[in-house]
Image 1: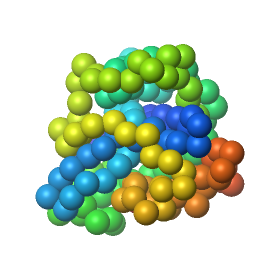
Image 2: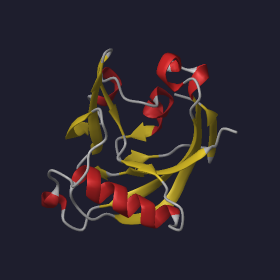
Image 3: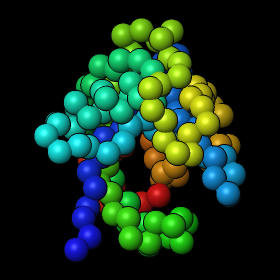
Image 4: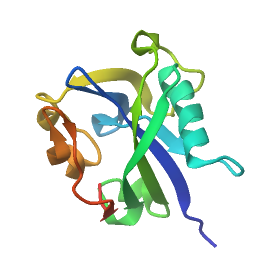
Length: 153
């Protein structure tokens, strides 16, 4: 039996920039929101705080749930390696109590090569996943327009 993984991600916007995890694989550099898989016994919010400490090295304040996204790997560009992967991501609006505290976390994802603030103006020109959320970024923030995005990348 294959399992569905639950995850939480942080959408952090400060000074018209979004905080992203910089990743690299055989296809090149791409960016994702900080966060990751939920562990048994922890809430989504607890898991998100833990994942952010691991990836961006600082505490986050977890705010409202913005949207839910599914990712069924066999349906997207990473199908060769993600063919058996199914994840449900819960994306929360977050803030940083100490914006200057970003640095090396305690545990990076395998493909993580850094953390980067990307200006909302530059975002359309970056390989940012999931691509489908790029139009939701506005000059003054983020508005998804729906709470369930479906199976997208």
